[in-house]
Image 1 (tube, one colour):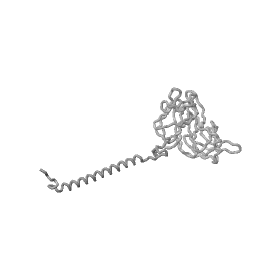
Image 2: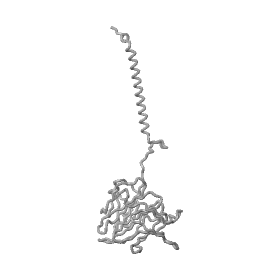
Image 3: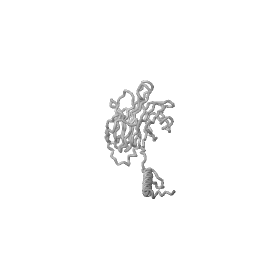
Image 4: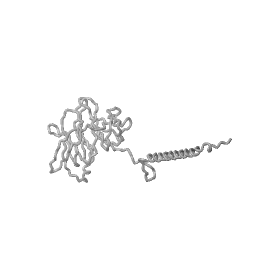
Length: 291
């Protein structure tokens, strides 16, 4: 028995062709969407990249890397020098221990959470923890000193120097005792010229014009207790420390002035800036964000 399906059902052939057309259209649409997704994926993969001169692809979006210079001063009175470690084994002062009244600059990668350990021989003198770091190039200043006149405990002071054109000077008092004196800055003594003098404030930062200055500690009796020189240069950060201790136990150390860094006055000869003393208060110590 032969059955002619097309004769018995004349619409089947026409309907079959219609569905084949629909299926072909669907496959074509699917292929187009898949191709578009592949092109989009490839485009996104290359987003944020460029072709180097040697033909290799490299990103042009990079994480910012800031230069943080660590400046540490030892203002802890004593004959024993101090070693500084970042973490447990990374010794910063590889050229030797830091004696009393010395300062050094260190260039080392730092991150929030790092700990700086100060040691005298094998004994741990104190630990400074870094809570946060500034999002800009900066000089990070840290000084270790005596906590009080009775115990041998240590204390820290810190400051972050802003990245400014003018020379900046931080004045820090680490002296422990009853003696009173105020810091002053004046033009360096020169023949035939009258020296101007201005009072400084402890725990502050000032900007000064380039030049050669004298800094002094003047007691309540008007007498100079200590004196040092400062050669100020633009874009440099300076430290003036009052050091010493009137110890209730152990040896005492007189009040002195430490200035760091010490520059050669000849470095100013190429500068056209007039030697006019100018002071302006920039900040108060103790607001550093990295402590």
